Image 1 (tube, rainbow, N blue to C red):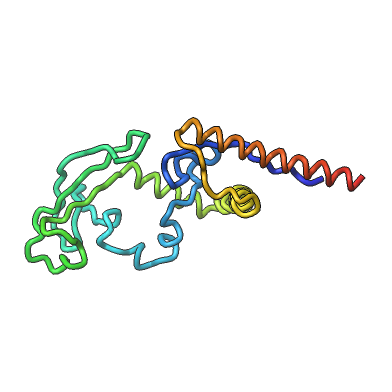
Image 2 (image 1 turned 135 degrees about the vertical axis):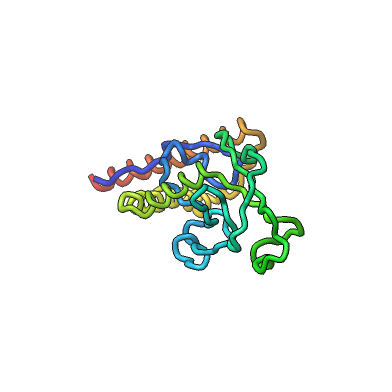
Amino acid sequence: MSILRVITVADVNHYRSDMDCFIPMMEKYMKFPMYKKELTDKAYQQNPYRAVNSHIDETGTLRCPNGRAFRFLYRQHVRGNHFGHQEEVYQCEDCTGCPYVPACKRTDGNRTVRMNRELTAMHQEVVENLNSIQGALLRMNRSIQAEGTFDILKTDRWYRKIVRRGSIAVRTEIFLVSIGHNLYKYYNKKQKMRQAA
C-alpha cells in the first residue's frame, strides 16, 4: 500500500530564503546558501581574509593575516533577523603599508569585520549535522518530498506567482493552493484504489 504524501505545513515569510519558515519542519538540518561551496571549495574554506577564518591569539585578540590586531568597536543587532541576534564590529588597528591590502579590503579606511560568534558556533553545528548520516537522510527526504511538491505546483499546475497582496491574503492563497493539491492527491489515490479493486 503506497503512502499518500500531502502538504501538512505551509507558511508565508517575507524573505526569499526558506531558512526561517523551515524551522517548524526541521531544526539545524537546513542547507544554507553557500553550503556546497563551503563543502567543496578548498580555496574558499581556507581563505585567510574571511572573517570566520581570522586568527585569534592566546589573549583572545582577533588578528589579520599580517598579524595586526582588530579592536572592538561596537555591538549591533543583525539587520533583518527576528531572533535578536547581535554581531560585533571590529576594526584593524592600522592597515597602512600592509602588503595584503589589495586582497584584504576594498575601502580606503582600516579593514572592518563583523563577527557573530553565536551564529558561527551554530553554523558549525549545522555543517556537522548536515554531514552526518542522519543529515544526509533528512536532506534526501526533503528533496524527495518538499522539492517534488514545489515542482508539481509550479510545472504541472502552472502556479508560478502569488496573485494576492498582503500577508493575510497571501497566506490564505497558499493555504487554498495546498488544500487543492491535497484534494487532488486524495482523489487520485481513491481512483487508483478503485481501479485496483
